[in-house]
Length: 326
Image (cartoon, rainbow, N blue to C red; front, side):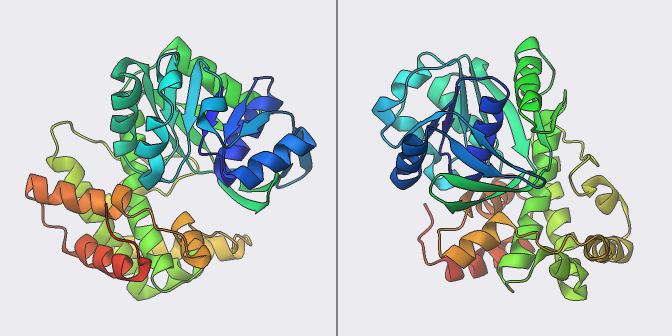
């Protein structure tokens, strides 16, 4: 197995698969790869324990050997370039999956290796890179995989079993497209309401104005999905916000539900949850705007769906980002 773009989250996935018995290669940045090469393993600081996984790592694409399974974990704006550097993997891969944010990741993978080799995936797992060779698994979360646009198969069951064997909580679903959209319409609001005011997630959810913004953005995303050629059924899923319930509730009630979610997080001590976009803001890294806000605005324009809240948030985040849109 190969994990392409193995930063914090990709390393956790690779380490989990290796712990479950798979032979794993990481394609990652040079300092991280050299530290793993020197140690012969990667250190994972888990929620309850620290453990080590034996795997290989390199920063040079041509040094990565072909494998039957490729997992793509780059930042969304780096996906196309990363795949272009791996034509020898495209010829050999039997199953390719991305746990990145957004929907377009699946299209990019299909262009790289063929639609029949791509399965859908999304992740609610959290991780940080503490230093080269060491990652923290900060949020156990749940991973979802399934055949596109819907259905199940032996190969998806096998990948799910491999992830489970490594301690990565995984759900194999016959409705992966609905799962991917359910996460996307939640990701845009949650990243906006934390990255713009630079608030921890639980605090942002409790703020009346930000909770109201969350619901507006959620409904715009759902309207874009509804206007597409394939109907999307939004779902309340384990390990994910109950977007179906939020969408079904009257606006004021949905706002109150969002605020209560923030209070619940505070009551159970879940006050260290930081969205990936907030981490990018803190680290002064490029924000993943094209795959989330940018995608929803483009799709809204293409389908004739007004998305004024998403458009304004995109412009504000672009101004803060400092990187030109691609």
